[in-house]
Image (cartoon, rainbow, N blue to C red):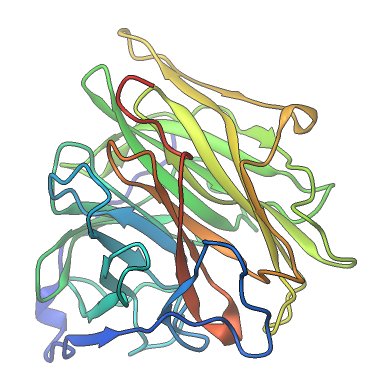
Length: 334
């Protein structure tokens, strides 16, 4: 049996809380990159290497329309004192996003947060995953992200590198879905799912890993393909997945795509399954190439009831930006 670890909060270890910083970011395209000529407009929510968006979730505030939406985003910072988590008031391009960088309280600062999702049915509760496979359960208030505990995802193996994590609620249980990112045609993403108890932080037994490969998302010669850069789960279990090409050079060029990847299933007896599409059955719902967009999408979130997704980028030297994508998420009755 794999051992589980649930780390109790350690607020006493932090003697000084970081100052909450609020910044309004104007819409901008990366320097020396062409602007979009169509209606899609990227809006910046961070600058430089510590300003990327590595994970994104909608704050459950009861709004179901395309009015401004509140989001929580995580950043993949690796050094002490760098930003880890922020909230964003996002107005779909009608005005500049308002970003509030928040201190991380209750544990040592995590290294390399790569994904985040809200805990279904528990407003103000979130789980973020590091690239090394540690899941942090935290609450969010106006002044800070406050850690309740942490636990490794089951099935960790040496060399695993995670970039995606999502939560859904089915048959009265919270279910987590996560994946390694993969790196090339020979190294697919490996997707798993398991029940997750937000009270204890314990994961149940995980499904066996399912290999997942995407068609190269508008590839650039020599680039590494990250077959899973983020995942979100629709109410019916459908998996929305992003992928990206990255040459491992901080200036890019980058390319990205968004897919319907398959489905997570669960029955009343507790059996969890993953049904993923093969590469030849995948069609990009949206794609972004190096010459026009030059974006590395690492985050996606769905606004409940609106049909609109918001994608976020970690463009390395160029920071992070958000973009709304219509008709990517299900609407009631659809």
